[in-house]
Amino acid sequence: MSGKPKLTYFNGRGRMESVRWMLAAAGTEFEEAFLETKEQYQKLIKDGALLFDQVPLVEMDGMKLVQTKAILSYIAGKYNLYGKNLKERAQIDMYVEGKSDLMGMVLTYPFSPPEEKEKKLALINERATTRYFPVYEKALKQHGKDFLVGNCLSWADVHLLEAILMIEELKPNVLSQFPQLQGFKARISNIPNIKKFLQPGSQRKPPPDDAYIATVLEVLKSD
Ligand code: GTS
Image 1: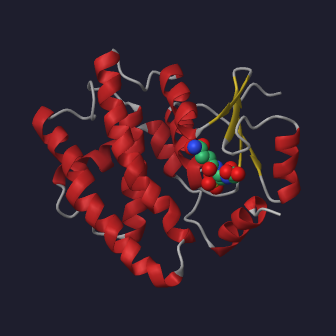
Image 2: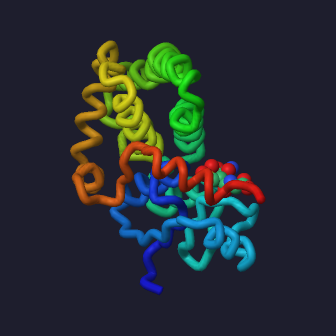
Image 3: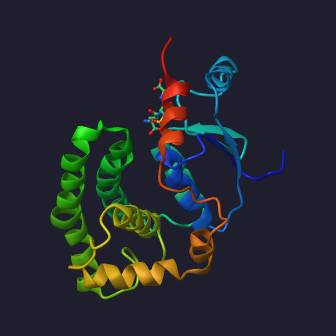
């Protein structure tokens, strides 16, 4: 064992991408094992590695962590990305959950049937611009600080940048009405660890393609 966290998931974004973002923001190197066959997935289950028979799986600090939110919460706490006190933590949780709702729609979008895609994309855009982004825009404008909570980098900032970049891939002008978020995007993207993660060749995954979708469906298909 190298001592680095080991991430087991598909070779694509899915639920694991936020974990990659958080570890990268924390400046922590990690290893990855990619699930390519049903047999690999079934072996993990047989070996008792997956508490609820589901991935993502992150092995770190002697634990086999599952459940994305629990994994992210552990990483946020461990690497000081979870506020200075309980009130900041509650604020971070609210911001993170909002973005998770939005990103949930982005996550399932590539798996939706072609005839539903246009409608789904319109809903993502509508929710981003009328429900979620206005909240972060207002918060940044009101307190005038560089970060969403407590004037230092937190899980909320990392998660928001991830969401902005993913939604921009689908709707390039989505930030046009949000000057604060444009500034936030530029600032957070320039933090050295994050800047590095955004460079080509990092462990950041590309948008899902047909091969990724086929692998996920094949590995998880029930007998
Ligand atoms: N609540 C879990 C989490 O957030 O980690 C859900 C995990 C989950 O549903 N994982 C899927 C899985 O293992 C894979 S994916 O949706 O991330 O691609 N499904 C198998 C199953 O039997 O549920």
